[in-house]
Length: 130
Image (cartoon, rainbow, N blue to C red; front, side, top):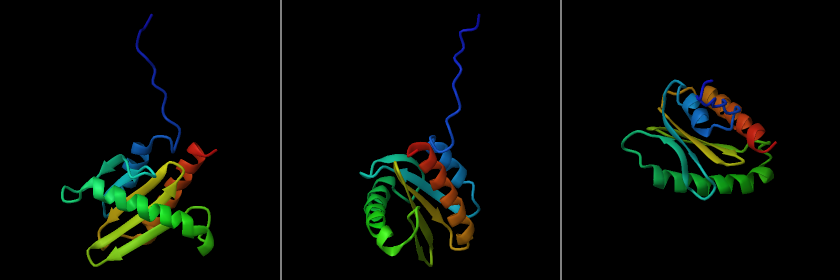
């Protein structure tokens, strides 16, 4: 008789670290994090020069604002925002457990990133809200 425990695979969207890890595989994504609504870092993989705590606090504040304004702006079911500058872009997606933030290089394919983030947010919604 074996005493080895069988660890079940988490359902899609339940493993937030796994969701982030998959998004970080996108071309020209340099980092990202998952943040609880109160700003607590759930998972992070960021470049050395980016500190998780200030970014998570900003993401939570922006995410709450996005959720409040999203219905008035008729943005659909999955509130999402993109912030761009000459040094790159940040993408923010809202989920039932918090926010997903991705940091991209200037040459990143923004449409591909938005599509992947939308899919990931949908996976998290189905796993946690349903």
